[in-house]
Length: 114
Length: 113
Image 1: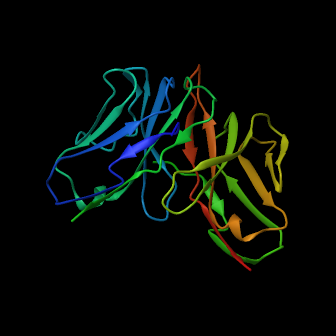
Image 2: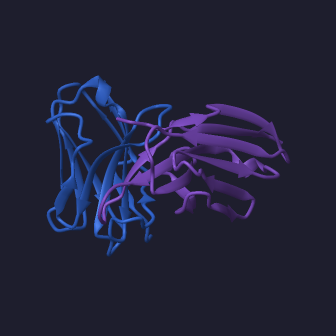
């Protein structure tokens, strides 16, 4: 399809483990966003990429969280030493160039840390 | 992180009834957005508002951008079962070309057939 895709759709891990979540944006979209959605809450901004660079990473909660987008398309969100509080749905969105253009969301990765 | 205040938190309505929900913020936004999220899916944009006072419709949906730029409401007329889901408001603002989106806490809508 032509939409934003995310893998895996579900991830169960143990406390202290490392996880990687992948996002494939819409082809040609230069802007890519990661959000975290806890149960019963709205999405909370984590990081914004414009091309290959992180233009705004002010939403990353701490240094255990890191994201990359080395070729300006696919992005990976990396979480080190996972904690139970990291359990949430991680949403990725992309837009054509990061201004007021519509952000298109993927289905999310449901992360459960045991 | 900051989340906008949305009300009501949840609502049960009869099919055919009209629905109203609103969103308030302590900050001014340049754009107000309304999204719908179905279970297991990401949010989907319903309506975007770009100017204070603007009233915009999309089918049975009508939304307004408050004059103060700190609030917005969404109305759904003649509700149908497929309107079930969680509705999020979002404010978009910032300087230059980058416009950060801040989401509300959501309104869960249940429609009774």
